[in-house]
Image (cartoon, rainbow, N blue to C red; front, side, top):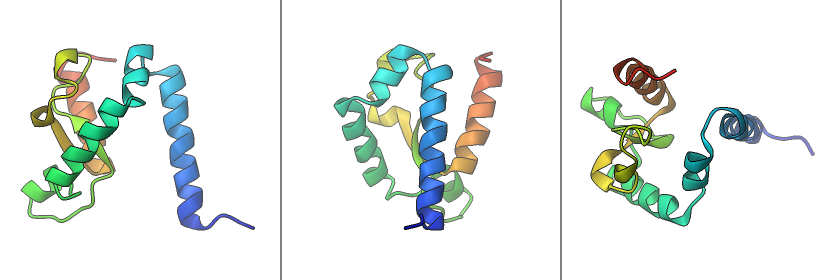
Length: 109
């Protein structure tokens, strides 16, 4: 049985996430993103945002969100990690752009 393209893409995405967690993300953050608390607040953010990318929506574009982002990154404000008002649903493209902006803004590598 071969994987459909969708399943194949999901497997590649999962592999990228595992590699990022293993080599780039600090252990405390990796543990946090696996926690029940994160899963619950993440789901609340997606429901609040109707599963839509908030950056695209601000530009009158309808795009499904792929993830939930911390507006102020957890490396900058760990205490805001479970605050719903610090979360936004984003598509992959907007998340990549925002992450790039955050790196410049907060001088991260």
